[in-house]
Amino acid sequence: MMFNNHLFTAHRQLIYQMTKREITSRYRGSALGMLWSFINPLLMLIVYTFVFSVVFKAKWPGTVEESKSQFAIILFAGMIVHAFYCEVLNLSSNTIVGNSNYVKKVVFPLEVLTLITTFAALFNMFISTLVLFAINLILGDSIHWTILLTPVVVLPLFILTIGSGWLVSALGVYIRDISQFMGVLTSLLLFLSPVFFSLNSLPAEFRGIIELNPLTFIIEQFRKVFIFGELPDFIGLIEYAFFSLIFTLISYKLFNKLRKGFADVI
Image 1 (cartoon, rainbow, N blue to C red):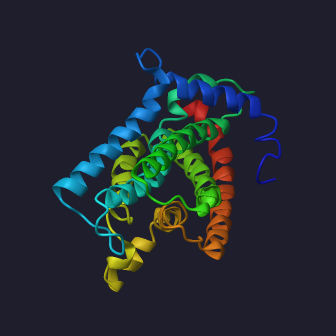
Image 2: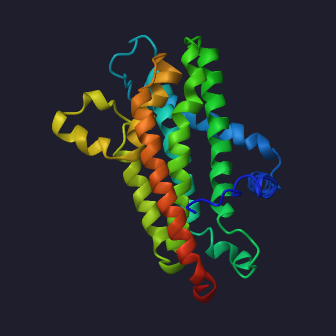
């Protein structure tokens, strides 16, 4: 059996409570509390708008020339996708080691730790997307009905992220240097994805390299439905989801195989 059939159902209350605790713990003790989840992405968007639209006067190919904020909004949309995936990668490297008390408990389902990290990152992604939506409204940009398809675009990446989290968290127990490598990898994923540039503006010989990045396709589709009002590539999303599911199933099996030695290593 590749997936425990009760992974989500039997542990849904545990996942919900621990995800809630994970989110609130990040802001516990601060004066503004959960408001920081809105303030942080808002400040980042303001900085992007100033730097790229005012200082560098950057324009995104194919967009309206008069829109000074358009480049920053398009860039921020790409950053939202990147931040979601890479937050899970960075945190997963220490998921098991940082929760060694759970490893000793035979009855505790260690696999849910990755789900908790992923759902917490998904919450942050949701808040950032709300900020992006609000800024679009404030600036008077068009709000397209295709925005309703955003979950369809994010779902395949969500599946891939869970698998990546299981893989990294399991390897992180045996290879402690993996946390350092994740920092390098997430930077590579940022600069080798169309976050700061349009994929169509690249020479053909380099485009293939960028398309190997698992974030590239989702970033492009996210922008399509959320900003440009275009339908996503449904066939491409189905294929992406299929391969993500296969990868996640393999990662889950590998996680369960390696977990037998967690207690000995930790």
